[in-house]
Length: 179
Image 1: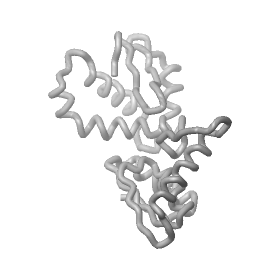
Image 2: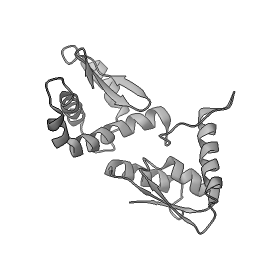
Image 3: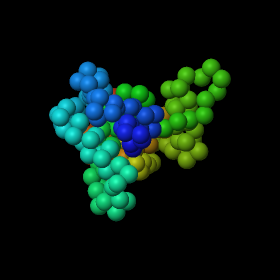
């Protein structure tokens, strides 16, 4: 969204602020764009152009109908860009979980994912569908913990690509796949 002429690229872990377009320096953009790893096959120029269009669609003079016509593009591009920021800030799990005093963030996520698997009484041979799976962190942890096979589904191709890259790297192809 854009406020007071400053553009912010919203993501669940907080806003990563972009400078006002008139004061955007090459070094500031370079630092931001280094976070976007480029795995999504977008050049730096394409990333910058996409952010500009995304921000432009949220200006005050752009109608909700105009945004609605671009909804499919907005969702795809948002997640194409935000995914790298999410992974940079959070790792492979794009959710929160309650934390005990002194408990590490990652430990709280794993504990919550184990709790879900136990509440569903998941065990080897069972099949699970993870809708809106992101890059598959919870799917892999639940599969590892329970032995159930987890299939992730998502509307974003880039996140599905990342899901399978992580799954192959962790050698969990027999327990996880993505569609």
